[in-house]
Length: 239
Image 1 (cartoon, rainbow, N blue to C red):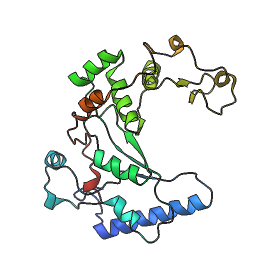
Image 2: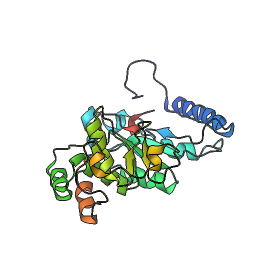
Image 3: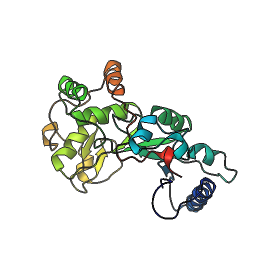
Image 4: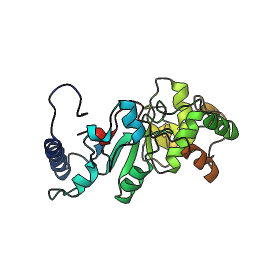
């Protein structure tokens, strides 16, 4: 939690102990075969961005700057390293240093708020979407995918689900169980065995699959980074 939040406030040392206790429990579950992968969420490195501090009305002296991942990796009780780190990540918050760190540790980075945090009306995203015949949301998801980042886009609309699937040509909705399957998936149901659906059968799907952002396109989206945590939750300010 944020140090200045209401309720019981932990010291940095108490928070470190709590994180390690939680990880010890996850390790036990992993070694007992109760889960195949374990990970963390909102674990950061080094320090928070100055724009975020200003947005929160804080200064560096007001917060406990945390390096959660280094603290965990240096813990002598670590027997299973985190396999994934789920963090807020979108076009206005690229988190490249954190992504590089996690990938260097063979950790998957999963982005939450990939679309709601992005400004989908930004001229750059609109122009790239028009260039490739897709939506601005597709551009953001493709940008994440090409950076090796998993994304969790949220939608209650079937047509938008179809649009989100346009970032890859080998993903399609499974008619029998509402999951998303690749053409090479191991699902034994008849709809998966029948191969990919025709493009026109994908809800909301228009235009060709198999598209990609060029290096120049990627750089344009990179340039949208504002180091903006849209909900104010910067891991560096968390205990």
